[in-house]
Image (cartoon, rainbow, N blue to C red):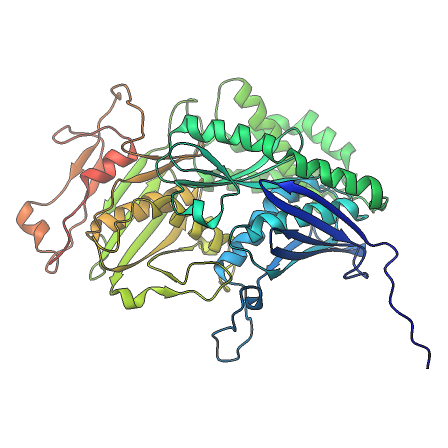
Length: 539
């Protein structure tokens, strides 16, 4: 029997100091059958990141099939899973959010016409509480794809920005996180920031902006390191079969049918717009199918590109798709107490987007127990988001909760976490479920507003109402919102008298909004609107 010692001739190690801790990336030793594999160690957090791509494109799809998996292993923190089977099951919520965190900045940097399956797997092998496994995995994913033969317009790097009220914290340690008032994850290329995700305790806009600028500078050494890896061990990018598109047909439609598409989109009613578009598609198929028999194969992409041209043209003219002025918001509506017997409920409307949020209170024993690689062992405030197919008018059966729903639910939790009363002031577990009833705009914004209403209707003494300004993507509360000029109209609160309002077990008359009379009014900003709807804690 002949036995040889295994050698790794392609093994290389790259190392820098990143925010006071060593960052090492090793290649050529593990997972040799992948397109690329990188073992990343930041401090003592270790993540093995692999990138694999199929040899042939997937048939019958019109999107790039990328999958990012963040696989947490409890041995990474020296624990045995608490489930009956004593092994990891489906990804926990934080693991799903970590997968989305890596996916979002990387997906747009792949070629849009690539149809080969690409899978990025991040195996968390050990966790150092001072070094984020999400940031470690993001850096490893960027490095793995960059040195692989998969086409990619990167690299990117990630960093966590914190602020303790006096100074910025970059990739804060466990001790620094105890006084941290802001957790902002930033992903960027050499020249541009490609993703920002933030959770903050009413931090001023200027502090956030300046911190982002500084964070972009702080992550440059990581990008330089990945560039060095590409030069020394990077593979040539493979040639792929580009997804087909009939440019001749598209140019013909732009030239001859553009006004028809403008007519289709010139309405503030989504149902009307979709009906017009369906008629336009049928007319185009009848008119051009003889000359272009495969027109329907490209119709989804044609609609996307054509509508994009219409929107751009109108914006340059100072016109929005639904006819609103550039500084005009959609009609707002809010009701509370509309569902009987539940602890609290709120219905929020913004244009044709409608979200029903329902709050439930329970003893602290009903807090969620967490079995993950992160520090938190239980969660007292829970928000769950559901967006069924009927909310967009689709005829599709409901299935299990998707990653998008997990992500939007967590987004609302982050927005409201800082205004939830402490356990000493309010010793209850809190669960809010937001049901998206119709969607024509930001349902996450509607969920935040609906949740604020439901919490106050349930008597939860939140520190301030919270809303999301989707135009600027800034979290605001009453104390942070700028003063506005007097509006040209006024909100009116229609409510029952105080005796009926206090006896909530007998009657749950809804509080409604109107815009006609002026008996009791306030500015149409949501935080002030929500504050005026707050009810006392039921006895």
